[in-house]
Length: 136
Image (cartoon, rainbow, N blue to C red; front, side, top):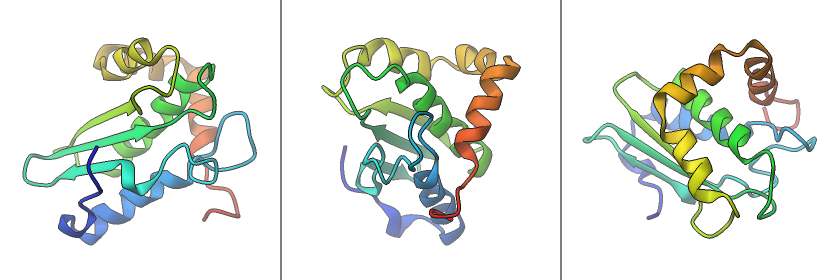
């Protein structure tokens, strides 16, 4: 991915994009940013094309929470950004053993919608999205 094009984004959109950095890790008492799972430099925005792309790097190559982390990022952006944006969330190439399978799940709108209809999974995602005191 290229460097973030944050300067081209209206300030309210920038605020929402930066807010996804404070998502809590499902297994650790730290944010995804604190664990270097997500970084601003791995966010790609094309305001004219209405697209947002986010690469994330799981903490280990066999991270069992990679799909949940990606889903949490996607949900945070879906809830925060205007509907005009197409959101692409995927694993940084070469950083996870099941990268292709996870990316396929995250790109499938029907799978994402079905996952969010599961009340237990939705509760876990919502817990990840609650900002803790340290991150805002």
